[in-house]
Image 1 (spheres, rainbow, N blue to C red):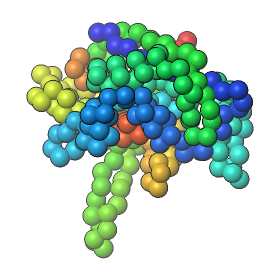
Image 2: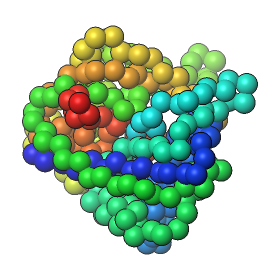
Image 3: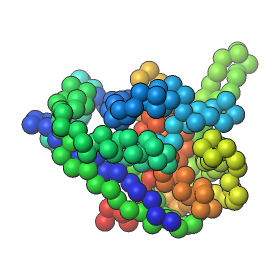
Length: 252
């Protein structure tokens, strides 16, 4: 099974400044690449639905380059003049719109306050089997929301050593599959286990605090769910920049 991963490089004439919580900025840039109004409205406001939940079925990575400076007082990162991200989607229409817009644009693109241009676009092939060692390029998050005795909502984020981490991710992949294809997968087998020690990441998305985990994992499952995992992302909040994975040996 072969799947495509898109690597996009933005270039500026000066260093690139981004807030420490920049996920919503990258998300906004990707949405702007959709140049067809009805599809843009569908992706922004609806997405694919199953059991009253909406799935956008795409994900993107953190900025791949390390920051030159972390300014904690001003709460921003200083990146080099060229920054790259990975982008993936199981929705061929969305992938096509974004890719075609990128390769055909001659305009400058603002990434936050930084005036950039697209200097490079790479399509990377990943041959996916039913068992892979993967590396997270953005944190994996999975959680449950409870109502407390005080009648307030509380979110509990699972860590990779809890069984709910794997079972929740499996259920999420099944739901995404049903949202896209309007039927359950023929084979719903899927599991994920950490290799080494995962790293906890606390991310602020707009006004929300989200906890996720990065690291090396081993995943195993049916072709349908492995395909969904690599293309749409693992766990929740993929379209907000969570759960993009690559094969561990991809960038070696």
